[in-house]
Structures are given as C-alpha cells and as structure tokens.
Amino acid sequence: MKKRLTLSLNQELSKKLLKTKIDVLVVGVSEGRTLNSAAEKVDKATQGSIKKLIKRGEFESKVGQTAYIATNDGTSAERIFLIGCGKPMKGLSSEDLDKIAMSVTTCLTTKKSSTGIVSLPSMKHESKENTDETLLQKIGTAVESKAYTYDAKLNKKNKKINYLKKVSIVIDSRQSVAKLRKGLKTGQVIGQGMNVAKDLANLPGNVCTPSYLATSSRSAANKYQKLSCRVYGEKEMKKMGMDCLLSVGNGSAQESKLISMNYQGGKKGDKPYAIVGKGITFDTGGISLKPPPTMDEMKFDMCGAASVIATMQVVSELKLPINIVGVVASAENMPGSKATKPGDVVRTMSGKTVEILNTDAEGRLVLADALTYVERFEPRSVVDIATLTGAVIMALGYSTSGLMSNNDKLAEELLEAGRKASDRAWQLPLWDVYQKDLDSNFADIANIGGRAGTITAACFLSRFAEKYPWAHLDVAGTASYKGAAKGGSGRPVPLLSQYLIDKS
Ligand code: BES
Ligand code: MN
Ligand code: ZN
Image (tube, rainbow, N blue to C red):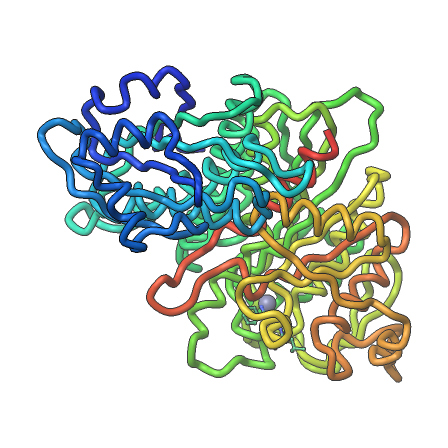
C-alpha cells in the first residue's frame, strides 16, 4: 500500500503550537465553553480574533462549522482554520464525529497545504463505542483517503500533485497516548486500503481485466508474509464444476479468474472469516446489452473485488490475529457469438441449475459459484460484496449500501461496523415471500424475477449460501462517485475492515 502521508499524534505540540512552521493550523473549539489552552494561545496571537468571531455570532462552534482566521508574522502557520466541535456537555454522536473528521480534512486540503497541525479540545461522547480513539480513527481514514490522487495512467504533464505530506495531531484527551495512536494508525491504514480499492476501480477496463486483478492480488500477497494467493483459470474452474461463473465470460476474449487469498493471522486450525467480491471488470450486459449512456461506469463493476483485495491488505498491515479468506470471482461480461443467451441453462458448482433469463444479471452468476467454493473453508461467516443492482440506488441512494443476510447477528455486527467506520449500510428484508419470484419452468432457479430487484438478487445468492452465516452488501450506489467526482470511493473497505477488527 502506498504511503503518501505522514500522520502522527504529538501531544507535546500544544506547547509549541505557534512556534512550528507549518502551512495550516486547524483549531477545534467547543460550543459555550472557555477556549482550551491551545485555542487561547491562537486567540492571543491573532489579536483576539477567535473570541471576536464568537462574540459577533459568526462562529458558534457547532459541529461541522468552519471559519478562517487571518494570520500574521507571529503565528508561524500560513493559514489558520477554526472547526466547531459541538457542545462539550451534550455528548457527540457517531455522525458528529464524522462531521468533525470531515471539517478537519477539508481545512487540511482546501488550499495547497503540505504540512499541518490539528489541535482538538476535550470532548464528551454520547456512547461507549465513541471515544477520542474512534474520532482519531475517523480522522485518519478521512485525511488519508482525501489525499488520494489517481495518477496511474495519466501522462506526466497532466499529473496531479498530491499536496498534503505531513500532519500532526494534538488532542486534550484522558485516553492513553497508546490508544489514541492506535486509533489514528488504524484509521490511516483503512484510508490507505480505500486508496488501493480506488486505484483498481479507476483503471480502465482494457487495463484492469480479470488477469490484472489476479496479478495485483498475487503481488499484494508477496508483500505480506501471512498473506498468500491462489488463482484458478478457466480450465481449473471447469474441473471444479463452475459452469455458472464461466458462462459470464463466454463472450469475452479475457480469461475468467477465481482468486483465492488467504490471510493466516490466527492459529492454524482456527476457522476463517470469508469475504467474497464481484469482479466483473466490465459489464456490457452481454446479449442483454445495456444502453450506451454511462456504460463507461460499468468499469466500476469490479468494486466488490477491489474492496476484498484492499481489505486483505488492510488486515495484513494491521496484523489482525484471525484467519481470513478473500475470494474474487472475476470475468468480463461481453456479447459475442460464444456469449451466453437469454434462456440458456447452466449448472452451478452446487449442482443447482440456473435459467439465465437476462445476461445482464451476471454478478449473481459469478458469485453463486464463488459462494459454493468458500464452503471448503468452513467459514465462521461469509460476506459478499457486489455492485449488484441498479435497484439499490432507487432504494437507498448513493450514500448507503444495501445489506441482506440469513443471520440477524451477523447483519447487526456489519451495521455496527459501518456506523463506527463511517461507511453505513442499511438492512433490507430477505423474507421467503420474495423467493418464489425466482421460480423457473426450465431450471431449479431463474436469474431474475419480481419487482424488488435488490432483494431478489440477494434471494438468488442465498440459495448458494445455505451452509454458513452469510451477508450480502449491495454497493452499486456507494462504491463509486458519479458526475464531476467520477471515480472509485474506496467503499466498503472501512466497513469490512472494522468488522474484522471487531472480530479480532
Ligand atoms: N452491474 C450491474 C448493476 C449496477 C447498475 C451497478 C448501476 C452500478 C450501477 C448489474 O450487473 C446489473 O446489470 N444489474 C441489473 C439486474 C437486472 C438485469 C435484473 C440491473 O440492476 O439493472
Ligand atoms: Mn449486469
Ligand atoms: Zn454487473
């Protein structure tokens, strides 16, 4: 994982806040309370400008609020920003912490700053899960992730400069320096993982093929002693009976791949946690061809896979003491004379037959065999991640991932991990009433059916996940940004990483 940014906790800084030469100083201020000693110093050095702003009602220290303060020769920082940290007695919620982390990040990155200091006052938290450590984790992730630039294939002239280089944080906290440091470090590693996922997502479909994902997974495994990787090609998958996965790549010149990564951080016999990603490196829809507008965005159809490859690196970097299996089911979905046609029937690795009514519902086809494949590891839980349906965007928009599960405890753990890591999901029902939408006259199960597209897609997957606690994350709306910010978002690497951290 690329190390672009030095991010550290330095509690000594409160003494030399205005003596250190930096580009930007970010000062947290609480609502309705006297300034902490750091803010007091800045106030003095700037002719009482903080108190003036507060007095005039221009800055109320509300969570998420920011203000700019004019600097002078005595301040040593080129620019100073205030950020609101809310009412200290009320207690901050998870969303409040998200907003504070966002303001910190914005202040550090809006101008071309390369070095910065962030000073935070003492804060009260609403719940036990929220601590200063959690806040620093959120800041670590947000700052690292915001410092990302895509430079893989841009020519030198167009190369964007990544300005932010070094940030130090000082916080009034009763928690131990070790804990605070751990939070910041964890957050930053998760941010680096998000950037790994973004790089894979942003590469064009002609570069990022199933073979590219395989090579990238292999080289990641080479970097960590406890991480290994095995890649199955079409011949080997055929032998395992994965005709359903293989049917998706039939129209493509690119070879389909099943990538199986293994992280051995726990004891030898410990049953692993499994994460399984949809890796369609381009989804034309196949014979059920998609319409042209925004079809280019279907290069993002491997974001589930990217999140798996990235999360395996995060857990390796954090040296979590558990075993984890990461599987990627990868193919390119193209039309062509050899392509699968609507009405074709294929046999899955599980033995169940599938009538492919729509070749554009291909993600579930590659995942079906991958879900059967992971049975061999006797996993404690299996979470699959897929840009599976446009319908999830209708249901939840672009900010929230869809979650469906055959196990309520697992579902709750994932929702909680999403809250904690600022990467939220919301659960949709997986009730039996939806299952009959997949009835077929010609096979055990059809690959589409019914009106609740996101749920029936999960119903399809559930038929192949009967042997273990399983959850499905539909990230079609959250794994990439549209419009001017078009690009991978790095989600749901934070949610997955947090879930595995909580299991450690
Ligand atoms: N990769 C798409 C889902 C998708 C849509 C992701 C929009 C991101 C943005 C998936 O393979 C697909 O085509 N799903 C179909 C399913 C339908 C044929 C039942 C869809 O959602 O339209
Ligand atoms: Mn599709
Ligand atoms: Zn797709």
